[in-house]
Length: 256
Ligand code: HPA
Image 1 (cartoon, helix red, strand yellow):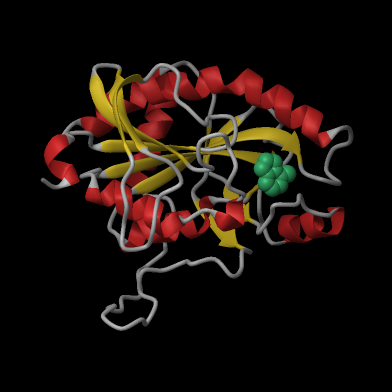
Image 2 (cartoon, helix red, strand yellow):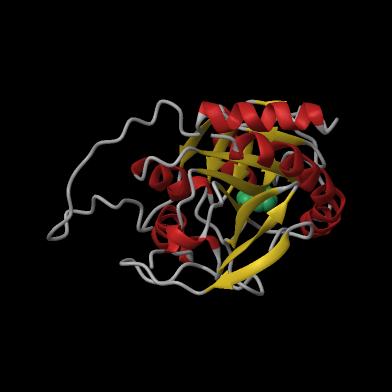
């Protein structure tokens, strides 16, 4: 039996820092699976939310042990595709660069710049048996999933900015003030560590993918104060809003 045969979940949520599980998801099963690229970060957790089925994957693994550069993004996306998922919502805690994105704010970015290196970033890797396709990346975040998230935020009465440019850095360390100045000059509004290669791999698999970004700190040099204190505080303050958006968005995205 293939995985798709026992799941009718059309939407998957990849949870990041602050969302290692999904309270609100009534869990029905959890399956450890393997892929040609190895094991995903965690078991695929299936459940129901807002009357529809969904799959949850903890990007950093159970217990949040995997740093951004060590995540097996290829296995994660492959596993979701294999499970029959048709759209992916990624939750990402990020640092704020733009003044409009104060900690506690949410955004649905529409573009990104990839500053990561050394990650397994493509399925078209030139290995024997692999094919080659140069995917288009005009819309790194799928407009269809983005729109559903924007509408869901409105329906949930939660403010979430429609758009923004995500810088994706290598981590796991945070950036220096000079690096943040450069990202700002490059036009980035926020900085996280996981949208790449996640977004590109989703595109390679024809999986519409978008990100709900949660601002949890001012990026270094932009604001002052204890960054880890900000991150802890704003993660705790923001996850209820994320869940409210998901509960509005899932039924819409699950329709045929
Ligand atoms: N930089 C990079 N990634 C992050 C940050 C940051 O300031 N905050 C949360 N994720």
